[in-house]
Image 1: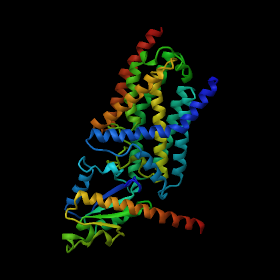
Image 2: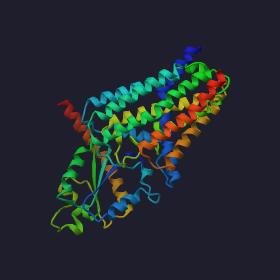
Image 3: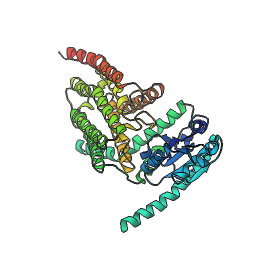
Image 4: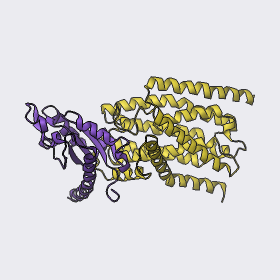
Length: 150
Length: 292
């Protein structure tokens, strides 16, 4: 993490899940895993977030909420789907109200599988999201420059 | 160097160095807090990485005027510090700081976001809680040193704390509110996952939030300067124990932050005013009697 972006702020949203993955996300902030040592902050504010971490599947009620939160986040931003439900819909996939994984409503950049996803794999996903954030920042800056030029 | 040149130099040093000093203090704060909670904690330079990142974000403001208000807030806080470190009137500094906070209140209420509005209300409550003690502190310095001028106060032979222990206790108490530390981090806190999200700073995006943070750093250095004013004397060696006292007070604030839970505004108001009346008022009473 030394040379890549050092200040990833997460926004954690729990979709339609059993809450297993949420507990694991919270476990990441405890003394055992301590993600804050990488500068990670679990912020509750989309306006301040860089990484949108979603656990659980998307249902017809939370689809709009997820879209709204995603749109409130300033660029550059990375979306991280944590857990099988967030990736594909998982065990709830066939339910009448489930649309599927997070990618049914917003573009997902990184998928972290697992039921529930282990804290180690969540941290690994965040580290990859941070690397991708750096890439996205470059392309976003270029795009903004061309927009201003035009 | 003449007296005026030194004063200008100190004020310029404040403008240039204050964000770095307060940023490092903030970094130490996060490290010490993490250690107190049994965690490793981020690098002490983490606050600077955060600021750098925030300046690189898209500016997605719901209300463009907010940026102007935040900028005014910043300029007024820097001006407050400059007035203080240039050795001018202490009372003027406190009035200037109150005006600056009014601009923060305007900036946060400009967007009509429910969390921001709630934070604004609480910020005003906080102001109501700490402002009497702030003004009383200026009065205390006047009674102890016969002047409001910072430049004259630092030339006294006996540190002001000898006359103003009650005022010092009261001032350190309200510092917890000013530093946005638990139990009084009502309007906004360092952790956004609270009931009003990020309170007054909820709608401040990217560079706006970075500017608010830097302004708060300027404010921290000014307020710690006021803490130092209780200890400093005409003796050049007094700088040593002044710095030690400032660091001790800052550590105390970190400790309070880590061992207490947030209170409701009613209790904050009661506590802050009680401490103001008991510690500050009693000290004021005794000081008035002695001066007679």
